[in-house]
Image (cartoon, rainbow, N blue to C red; front, top):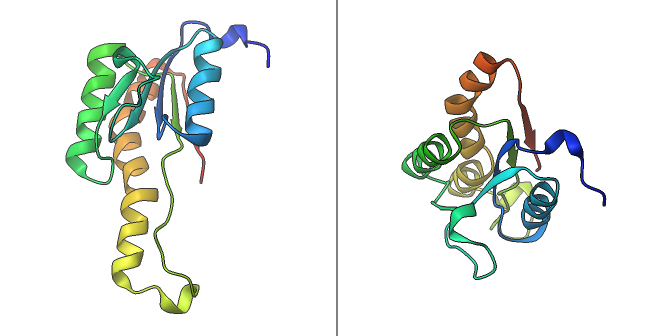
Length: 136
């Protein structure tokens, strides 16, 4: 992949940015010259501390930690890529999913994006630019 010059110097947040697709998104944005912060519960050895925010995004407090770090370290944001997600649901499909399983899924796959977007979207609107990407 070639670097996109239009990404040079942009400020980016990638949730779930330490494994799989999230890690690839972080690598591409960095290669393109963006200033990137990745989130996860724990920092892998191959990601510098400067590029990492440790937080549990399934909690409101974890999302606040992320937002505060973005504002402190980047001074705002131009790109938010929500890649964190997954499922621990048991086999059996819809009929075996009780309220607890639905709550776990929403806490991992929906509420973090809602909380982070709600906090950072006003800044993007104020600067009249930005993009939010949800990978599910």
